[in-house]
Image 1 (tube, chains in turn green, purple):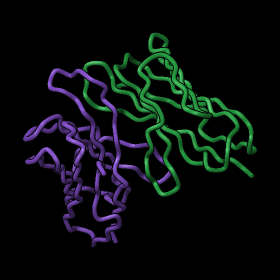
Image 2 (cartoon, helix red, strand yellow):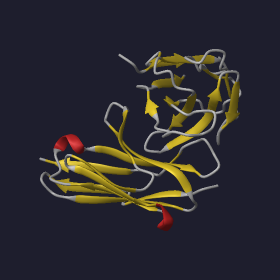
Image 3 (spheres, helix red, strand yellow):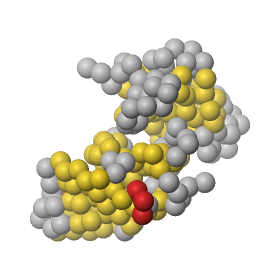
Length: 109
Length: 117
C-alpha cells in the first residue's frame, strides 16, 4: 500500500519563527488534506489541497502531485500552533484517506 | 449547527466486554469512516462506508464491526476479539457522490477514548 511519510517528526520553535513541514507519498493520489490535532485530540482541517497552492492567514500549503509531495508553511508561529500536524492522502482508485506519520510541533513563548 | 457527534467521550470497560461507540452526523454526507489512534501515533483506518447498507474493511478491521443502516449513523463495535482495544477512536465523514465527483473533504468528530481495564 501507499506510504505517507512526514518530516521532521518533531520540531521546536521560538514564537515568531517560520517553519516548513513536508509530506511525501509513494504513489499517485486523488486528494490530500492537512490537519492540525490540538492537545484535546480534535482534528481540524487546515487545507484541502490535491494540487497547487493555497493560503489561509499565516498558513499556506503547496502540493506537487506529479512529484508526490506536499508542503505546509507556518509563518510567525504562535504558541497556539503547537500540536501535531498530519497530512492525509486518498490514493488513486480508492475512497479512503491514509494518514501520514505526523509532525509534532512545539512553539515556545 | 452541522457536525459530527461522537459518544461517549470517555469509556471504561472490563476486558472481554463488547463496547459500541456512537457516531452521528447531520452534514448530509454520504461517506463515513472510523479511525484508531494510539498514543503518539498516526491514524489508522478501521472501516469506511460510502453509502447506506454498504461498508468496507480498512487496514485494521480485525476485532471490530460496524453497521450503516442510516445515512446519519455509523456505530463501531469493539469486540472481545480485539486484542488491544485501549485507544482514541475518531469518526469522520465526507461528501462524495456515487460517481466519485466532488471534493472528498474529511470532517472529524471530537473522538472517543476507550480504556480497557
